[in-house]
Length: 268
Image (cartoon, rainbow, N blue to C red):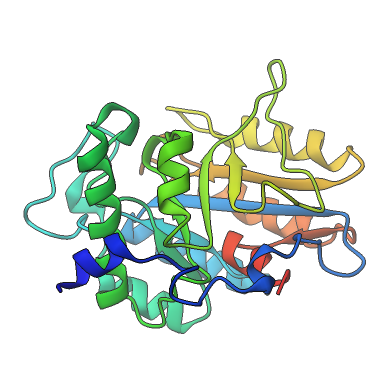
């Protein structure tokens, strides 16, 4: 049996990996009522190295999600926002994971799987996860978060993917004109994480307003789906804004800034 057939026919539960700790409700770290995840997608080499360094400057770990085939000659840009020449490779991602940052799967080739035949969608998910297992140092399916391209999934795709990873990040639930957030403690939705995004142009003001709105609420877990810096990616942030944002937020005593996998690991 080849690797992909094994992945298709097994799951975390049947392999004995899905333990009681994997379904423990996620609680924020002690003394924190709010959790924020800045979840950066696609794998822009220049931006991701800068994002990681800025997080390090403030004692934080970056949440980085990359396209499995983005560095390969076969990869074709799905739109004008993801240019292959800007994407890094697994030498970059292993370097960043070695420095403690979180690198997670963000699709096989950046297709909208809700517009893809179901059998192909499942096959693409398995190919992505297989590639990460083979190429990302320390990859562990029991702690992995699969980040859907375009934040697009269906209940059937979620159920399938959650057989093979700890959680999925997908489109969230919107309040009128406003991003919402995941409730804490996270009970039945622990495996399905809602996120919010905006683009295609510079996203500084939107991110600023959404985080301020969130910090005024009683608590919760806000996951903002971002991309590159300056002119890289759909809805980028300016590097100066991200630096000033992190500098301000680390002073908020009731807020934890964490990657998704790291946050879920606190439930163990």
